[in-house]
Length: 322
Ligand code: AMP
Ligand code: MN
Ligand code: MN
Image 1 (cartoon, rainbow, N blue to C red):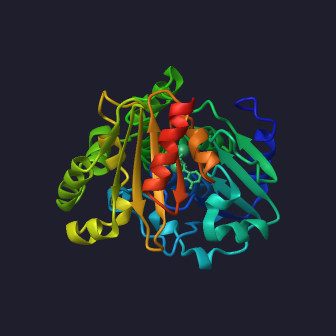
Image 2 (cartoon, rainbow, N blue to C red):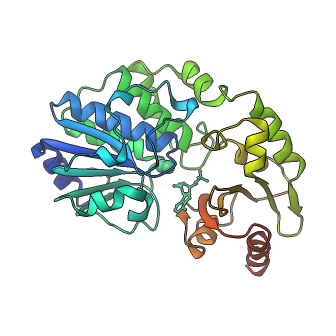
């Protein structure tokens, strides 16, 4: 058993016995979701399993900054995911984070939920939820080791990407000595840290400089509540030529002022709603997100809202009343 998780051994046993495994991560996948998805898929394929990987979006197009990741040949469109013996859900804090694949999971004989989000709703038949680790990738590494997979350079690359992105390049409090030791092991296996850093953090299109200019220029500061927020409209994306899945890093620019502890970035969606990314240097934003139907970690969370300014005002009021 690892991480004191009761279902750990059961998960290892179920995956060992399975012939066909469907591996999935959350919608709008980030580096941890993609890295975990691809590493797990590569590892299970090495064991001779029939593996298909996907997530519940309209397509499985990998965001440009992660397109260098190995294992993408194992991706299938969500509609093409075959009925598996085991459905392995990665980095999903709740069943609804599977999006369109939630139904596929429900129809599967065995769902394994491997995740690190506090408040995970334990939607699996087997739940391996560890909130003290940096990333789902950290758990996938141990899972693959216990399954007898020989970790190779490709898997190490995917796993390192999961860790480096979820720890904010080893900056956040979830980056422990164990996390850094594991990252070092992955480098020994061949993960190329400077190459990965360039691909993930320095491969934005030129237009995203202009988009960042807009986001920073219109940022609003609530000095007393130490809250800063900004937004990206669909028009901003069209005019700067930036894809919606290439806007993940912008919240890090918004949060970088010493004038605020809590930052939010509102992103307009095709359906008129706003996806809200929140980051904090202390006060719980997990609570803010959960109260609005979303979720995440205490210091990094998200939710969807139908109005921008009213939602920003409600966050200000909530921060003031704490
Ligand atoms: P993001 O701002 O999209 O990078 O998300 C930050 C954290 O919040 C990640 O751990 C996400 O998995 C989680 N998160 C974001 N949006 C949602 C949502 N709508 N529901 C639940 N969790 C979310
Ligand atoms: Mn994630
Ligand atoms: Mn994660």
